[in-house]
Amino acid sequence: MEKSFKHNVTLHKDGTYSMGISINYGYMTPDELIALANIAKKYNVTTCMATTAKKISFMDVKEDDVNKIWDEIDETFGERLSYPHGKIVVCPGLEYCKFALAGRDNKKIAKMVEEISLKHNAGKIKVGVTSCPLGCAMPRIKDLGIFGTPYGWSVVIGGNAGAHTTIAQPVADKLSDEELYQLLDKIYQYFEDNRTGKERTVSTIKRLGFEHFKAQVLGE
Ligand code: SF4
Image: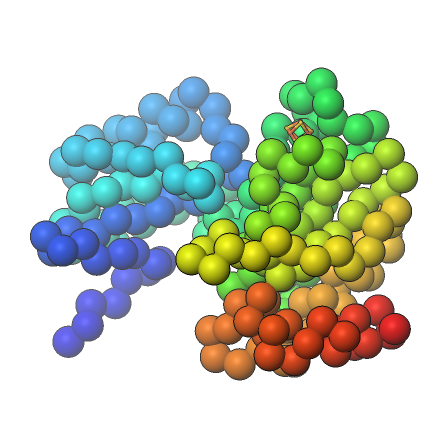
């Protein structure tokens, strides 16, 4: 019988599992990092990996330890290491980067995306949010990309970094925070209404056409 785990894990060919632990958009204090390392050591994890999704993955966890580790992580960190963060990647942004544009607070927008995504059953949507067009969180190859410009926020859709790499298509630009919220809500609603199975944004748009997406989301 298939084992049931508290959160997603990946089975390896040697029978161990990797657990991708979503950290808060990639940010931790040194004390939190030490606490996480202590949990890894307690369960004899020999290798940890920093992933492109800003997770720390415990790479060789024994089956019986998976849920015990999730319990310890939940008890130690609470919602700070909660699962949804893993789909949203941010750049160092307004807080740290000298290129970040005034008013383009990407962490605030990431929290907005998280709130909207939890309202909808829109499937797997990977998101990149950056505070300038340079795009260090790779918004142009994410399902949904958002980047700051001197004139507001720009939004692109349908990117993918997989085997058939696809650059996301422009949807709108010069958006205020409020206009961005309205647009993102429509985008998540669109994929909730139109995706089939585990389809990603690029496949839904390919199947129905970008004109269909624009008609439904932008009313064009
Ligand atoms: S995308 Fe722009 S603001 Fe963000 S880290 Fe890169 S250069 Fe800095």
